[in-house]
Structure formats: C-alpha cells, structure tokens
Image (tube, rainbow, N blue to C red):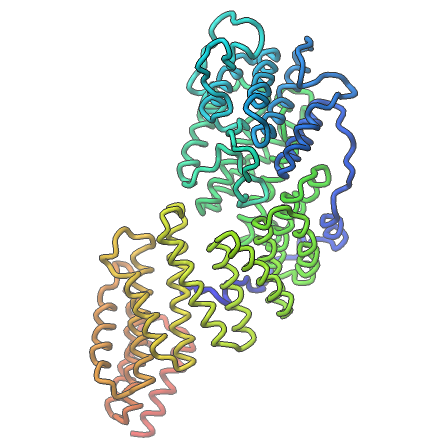
Length: 610
C-alpha cells in the first residue's frame, strides 16, 4: 500500500549512469537572477515578447505603457499609417500582446479600441479571415460587446477599411483561433487564478475538467491543416504545448511527455528559418520554456536526470525573459528533479536559492509551492528548523486564502517531520488533519472530477497510517475510529467509484484486520473479537477477480494475527494450530523473506512452549 508521510518524499535511488549530471557552475549560472535591465526592444516582435512577459508576471500597467512606446525601427501598434504587410504582421502580434494586458486593467472603451487595433492589424497583414474569427471569439469572451446602437458598433467592420466583401469563417479556423492567445475580459483589478505550473494558462484553458480540454485541443489540432493558410504565425507548437499541459493535469504523464517533445521539435523546425512567416509569434521563448518545464515534471519519477536537464534548459532560456513567477516555478521544478535524482548537494543549493527567490513574488498564493518544495528538501537532509519555518509560512498563507489543498500538503510534510523526530503523537495529529482535508476536497463539488479520486486515495492512506500510529501509541479508540472511517469510505454501496474496486477492497480489509489487531492488543479477552475475526474473513472472501494472490496474503496475515491473539490468551495448542495454518499459507505463496522469518519464529516459539 502506498502511504503518505515519510514515503511521500522521494528516496535516493541508484542511477544507471552518471551521464547528464549537472555541472556545479552550470547550476550556479542557471540560478542567477536575470540580466536586468534587459536591452530595449527594437522591433515589434521583441516588444511583443516584453509586453507578454510583463503580462504573465501580472505587471499589466507596465505592459500597457510599454506596448505604446515608439520603436527605433519604426512602426507602432497605435495608429493608422500604412505599413508593409510584413510589418503589419509583426504589429498584429504586438497588438495581441497589448490587448491581453489591457483586458486585465483597461476600461471597456480602452479594451474595445485595443481590440479594434488588433483586428485592423490582422486585416492589413492579409489575414482577414483570422480577423473575423478573432472578432467572433472576442465577442464570445466579453472583450467586445454587442452594442444596442449599430452606430457605435465595434467589430470587424471597424477594424480596418470599409467593408468590402463578407469573409467566411470556417469551423476549422474558429476552432483553432479559440485556442490561441485571445483573452477573456476580467474585472479591473481582478487577480488571475494562481497558476498550476510555471507557464500560466491562457484564459481559454481554465476549464475545470482537463479531459474536456484534451478533447478541445485535439479537435483544434485536427482542424489546423485546413485553417493553416488563414493563420498568422505558427500556432501548432503552442497548441501542442497546451495539450501537454492538459494531459499532465489529467495525470497522463506519458502522453504529456510525448506532446511536449513534439512541441520542442516543431519549434526547432520553425527556428530553422527565422525569416519565415511562421516565425512570427508573441512568445518565441515562452513556449520552449513551458515545454521544458512540462518535461521536468513528467520525467521526474522515471528519468530524474533528464528532468534536471530540461529544468536547466528552461532556466537557460529565462536569461532573456523578465518574469519572476515563471522563474520561481522553474527553480521549484529543478529542485524537485534534483531531489528525485538524489543529488542532495545540488538540491540544497537550489533550495537555498529558491527560499530567497520566492520572496520576490507579489502574491502569497504563488509562494506556497516553492515553500513546500524547500520544506521537503530540508526535511530530507535533517534541517528541521528551516523546514518548520517554511511550513509555518505555508500554513499561514493557506489559512488566509482558505486553501485546503495547500494545507493538506503542509500537513503531510509535517507528519514526515514529526515521524523522523520520533514524535508519533505529533505525526498522528498531522495525519488526522491530512485525512480531514483530503475528505473535504474529495467531497467538494468545486473539485475537478479527475482530482477527486486522488484526494480519496490520500484520505484512505492517511487513515491507514492513523490506524497504525494510534496502535503504536495504545490509543485504541482513535485506531477504531480510523478503521470505521475507512470502512465508510470503501463500502461497496458507496456510490460512484472514484478509485479501482480492488484498491478500495484492499483498504477495507486493512481496516477490518487493523481494528481486530488493535482491540486484541488492548483487551485479548474482548467478547467482540470473534465477530471482528469473522468480519475480516468475510471481507477477504469478497476479493475482486484477479486478486486471489492478495487475498492469500491477507488470509495468511489474519491467521498469524489470530495465533498471536490465542497466545496472549494462554491457549498454546490452539495458537500453535493457527500458526501452523498461517505458516502453510505463507509458504503457499510468493511471500517476502521477512514474512517467512516472522511466522517461522512464531511457530518455533509456540512449539517450544507446547
């Protein structure tokens, strides 16, 4: 059974080879602050990148002001002077970045004017169909509003020259444009949702169900060949990246890895010809950074050294990007990859740097992830005071923002800390908190459906540890309460299954056997013991198909516990018979050496006493 607590921290594992180990100097360079001030942008594309960086860093007013600056090489996003088509295409990219910033802080009039500039630039660049599709999406998302008076109408008809011929927007083009950087309208001053990764999702990607996002993105990719001729730039790498992020959110790490690698490969093809039309995109670096970040997370468990390499590659690109939340997120990914690879010296250095960097974030909600990563690393190397300080800050932020998910993670790490210090009572208290938070999140209707099952699993694993710690401390009522809570959450008639039936059955058997052992240890002559024993055997007999071996394990373990109970009662002959039966069952399966040694010792002791 997988349990939280101490096992929630990665263990140092052997490595097949030493290829790809980070050089200490490379690590120091990657963790340096950005080279500020960055060079002044000279082209519309460079300016679009800087505006987009400031927007992602939630510095919206700076982004709006910067977007209006005159460029040394000419051209401005604001104005109607005629420009060549290539310059118009670059200005369309800049206008898109400006609109994304204004949608957060501008008035309705300012946003409508910026939308008009974007549509005008797209039409002047020769992408009238994309302009019409963008106008439709802007109307859908509240950036443009249907006016009551047609004389004040702001739409594609005011985005350029006088209307000539109607432009047909195909379903394929509309499907792709909906997944590009077309913003939603937010209330002025409203904060964006806290990002789940180092690349904040665009407003179109905030659906609560990642499986729906996967379907929508795959449909957009299928539609892309038919719409490609009508689109400015190369949208496929961005779509592949967002597909990778949605797959990661759905827990499909292998598919997410493939999609992120596809995005990087497409970027290499685009970068091979920097003069090509496809090279025009708002974030020439951000897609690459985010793809490396996805790989740093998805490869962490299976290929930790490769994950370290991708995190370092992403930070290398960050030298040209001014975005504190993005940088902190990447350093967090690097720290977790170094920890998974067992590179403790490098992980300690990264944790110290991350503890300093997270203070630069403007929003407390963005600090919890880095602080949890720092606390986990400090626990691992035995620096308990630093870990406790970081976790206290996390709990304060979680309490202020009513963030139960973050509070749950802090409690898991505190349980690990107390357990390593030998404080079982403190560990028990935190595990009960983990179980309570996980239950609340699993039952909360606001929790996305794909996350309810994992939260239920965390609850059951925490309750299983509560049962064991309470038995170690002799707190039989607490142990029985945990067993009954597991029983309630795993009963067959409990409604829609959030976890596989075999896993629920295993937890249910564990709870029945655990309650029997707890009661037997506290009161060997309790009248209810035969009922508890029969109840455990009954549940073992309900093993799902294909899990007969696991049922054999539980039968052998239960008979062994029955023998120990009879021994406590002084019934030597009956205890020996039960022990011999358990010994036969252990030997009749592929048992661990520890199990065989334990039952052999019990049989030997009972035989000698008999």
